[in-house]
Image (cartoon, rainbow, N blue to C red; front, side, top):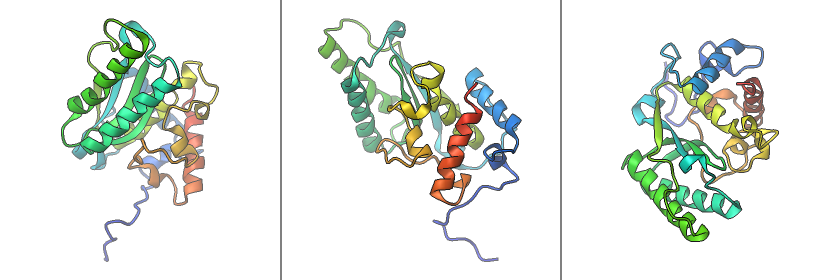
Length: 227
């Protein structure tokens, strides 16, 4: 049997985990993954590939001190995005999903060659200096060290990204995920180019054609909106 070339797109087996993405498929299974993201549980029975475990992908959460807002205007969002993009390029990191909320940040990230702590330090410290200088703030900007959760299965990777992008809707600061400009959602749901976003390794497996992938991704978000 002739092997596929290394760069050939690999579509996920419909009998394995794409069933969670197909409308009319095993919605209960997807719901369990979404609830697991919310509750911080890991599903050992999730179908596995080698993408995540080998490269150490993390769900990183950073909060403002005492839950205070850290992004007070569009320039603040822009400054954090610039720092994150610069660190991503310098450290060879891959950012698969993200959302910047007024008082906290979620990142689904593979940190690159110098590790997660160095990467986050390169983002958090300069932004804290920016915030203190701009707003004459004295004291801590961030609530301690960032929190990181290892993502150990592929199904959990996409479900976690899905959960992250739904944060603005759950927080009632946006009616639909596409209404919030500071997330990765538009890149996947509408094909909008975003320099911050590196394509989720599982995204191409949703469907063969870009427009079908985008449509199915939007449908996936509808399924998990209530969690």
